[in-house]
Image (cartoon, rainbow over all chains, first blue to last red):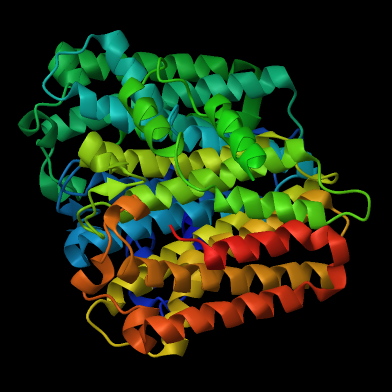
Length: 293
Length: 293
């Protein structure tokens, strides 16, 4: 894991515009939010799925590294915009002041906007699949995962839900969009870098990604209710304070934990046909569900 | 012109998610900002450049229509974010309440984010060039034009410039990014839909786009200083009120007008080798420099 994390960090360092190039403050802020932090869950999933994708012909790590950078750009942009005063109004992210606190609101807005553009620039500027047509499909997949029927749509549903008591199916619908879409896309895009899986195997990776994305959010809800700010690197207990419906508010901590375990098991079942090639994907499922931060 | 405008409007109507699909408020707001307004300058440039691109083999209008939609999504997103309180804090756009006024700030933020994603989804989801490799290059070109070294970067430079007296070269640097990058990309991408121009001809279209993008901004500055809010459909006199450096504040209305004319002439000169095929591009140059709104 630390090898992949270091590899992606170093590629991001290279792909982000240098802080010495105008507009300097914007580039400095982009580097501030992307570099030196985060668990890099999405690149890890992409690498693991890329490994699962080939029978002796796993996806090229050089391709996965670029894909990982694009995923992190989208993820970082969503965090920066999510922390803005008009959204979750949070001042702390990855143990540091949020972007709009360290810089200012307008810069944070533009940082998010420019990081989204950079994700698509990176994804189209390097060869990621044997066939450029496949790569265009990958661009489309990431755009759909980020857009109004993916991550941004999930944020909108989240906004509408403040103060409401949601049922578990309603919570699922929200999180399949908000967190799930990009996590799911990470696994699927990693697999597609390998270019060797048939439609059925891709659907299994997709199912794994969907379940693990959901489990990720369930665990996030538990941790928010159960951990300290110092451990999380972001403000703890914020969901309850903001009157946000979560798995914890809907079914309590104990049942939420059990639900995450169940999702993990279903995710592992989806990979039954993959044998040893899916070892890292399985390990990541464990990491996501058992993590403490 | 009205034929192209109607065509793009109808394609946008089709490509934007219906307001009946969840998240409804987000989709409603996306349609509010994109549909039923705007001069559609960028699609017009794309269509005109597509027409200039082929010797008896102009770009397919079906392709140009899709490209035009992607360009309008990026443009509309930039207006929505630009109007937010932390940016230009404007309440009026295209003669209607700005998005964050009609809806709310959080929705406006997400509308912009989702429209940017939609632009790349649209651009990768339809066949726009004979060769998918060319189309990937088009995705990259749009991403670069929108990002930190294009439009978003121009906004950042704009922010840093408030209250400063810029020289004409400094103003040019700002506007080549802020407005220029996307206008330039519009012409170049339109030409690439045709897939028939060599590098030299593409460079000429690029030069035309660069000059006309700059002229567009000079005229915008003159109109902001010289027109009524009712004519503009956005708040007039706002640059001076916000203490923003403009071509008018740098060199006065008369010299700014002359500069726009000069840029127009240079833009036309760049197209000297195109003959009749560039008729519409020339007409658009006139339209942009002579417009009254």
